[in-house]
Length: 240
Image (cartoon, rainbow, N blue to C red; front, side, top):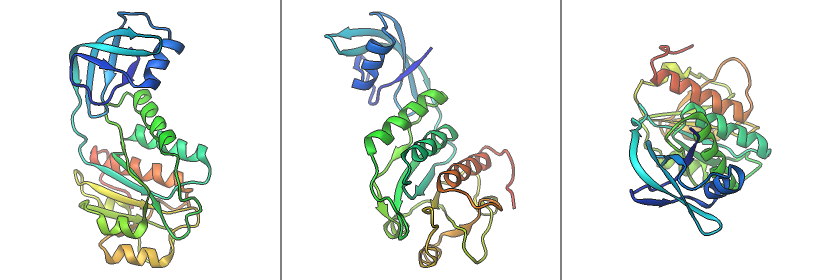
């Protein structure tokens, strides 16, 4: 059964977001009383029946909680420089959501060529990816922030910065402890400036690599989330 996103479910009749109501009524042409499965983006799944209201709105009469999804083993927070190409950014958002990212912060570095994001569009991509992948948790999309501020405010137990510059860089498997909340920093197309890497290292971030190849920003982001998630799942002890 196709599922639909409805944040803040509280029982009774739940009004669906405008985009979901439009999809149900105009695209799918569902009829009154049809069984509906809802996810709230916080791990909950609920069943109910469709209630059509007026010409455009729709709500769901909740019947029962189908499942309360478990909390992720650990939070994966990715700070990543915005991409110039919107389609590449959307590809990253989609894949990172499928792989289990918990939070995404667009970070503004010295070499970032794009400093603004289309937040509403990004949120739609995240919701669609969550539903398509069968997940119940919607990644938190945070406001764009300067790299120095993100470094200063970081509170995660494991903090890493991926870069292609000189100096010792460890693998994620050598740094991350399974079950530990993590923050990974991914730079822009031109990589982080050496002074930014130094700033992060001074603040307790560990320099890491993502393998022998030079990766695009969006590929690096996806690779980092996948690698971290595999470690949390106990799929392997880590790669050098």
